[in-house]
Amino acid sequence: MNQPLRPAASNATNATLGKLYLVPAPLDFGCDSQTALDRALPAGTMQTAADLQHWVCENAKSARAYLKRIGEVFPLCVPLQSMEITELPREVHKKGDHQAGFDATPLLQAARQGHNVGLLSEAGMPAVADPGSSVVRAAHAMGLEVVPLVGPVSLLLALAASGLNGQNFAFVGYLPVEATERTQRIRELEALSLKTGQTQLFIETPYRNPALLQALLHALQPQTRLSISTGLTLDTAHTRSAVVKDWRSQATGPDKHTPAVFCIGR
Image (tube, rainbow, N blue to C red; front, side):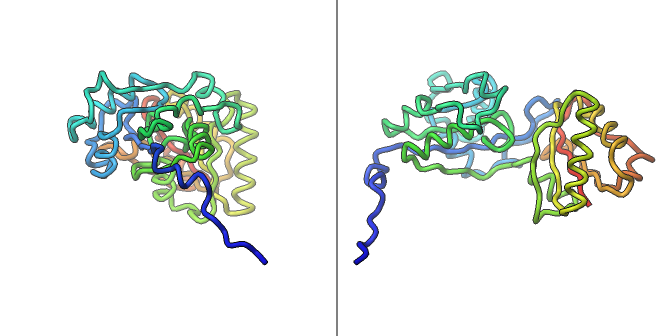
């Protein structure tokens, strides 16, 4: 006879462990202007962030700058200089941490002691188009509760504004920098999108935005749809979605300073 299922053993100890909160940041990192936090983040997200003392982040300097902004809206639980902020190793930024090559368990020791920990990237949702997945994996392995908070995710905002297929899509990260490889990759993604209907999303370092636009206009077919969203959530936010033929006749696109999300499809 089958025995009734029992709760996982780790559930009994979860009450003594801290939680890992995935804290989104505004999308204005590196931009000339900043958006008001209450326009980009719900009050509940900001209040939760203000209550956290222990952090794992990409960059401690930008994390402190963000927490300072939070503190102007909701009082921080401790003075900013008393925050315990740990950076992810640089190699995680460069090589990515999604291939299980980095053990982030030591970064979550505060959670073993019952403290809640915040995971923060420089813009948007950590672990989505940004480092942090290794920390999330480690949290699950330790039996921590992982709590994603509500906030801006540039990929979804750009997809929603594009008019392209939002039921079947893929984010493919950065395209190759070398011109021949980049053109080949663009044509591969276009062929996949035209065949399957799957929208392809990608990003670029802002100073390469104009070069990427020119590469897209050169490589894509005239009736392929291209959408570019820039400065999302800022007062200067803009999305243009049109077939490549129309882009070529009026090719004004993103500048070298503002983050952009590129989408192609049919």
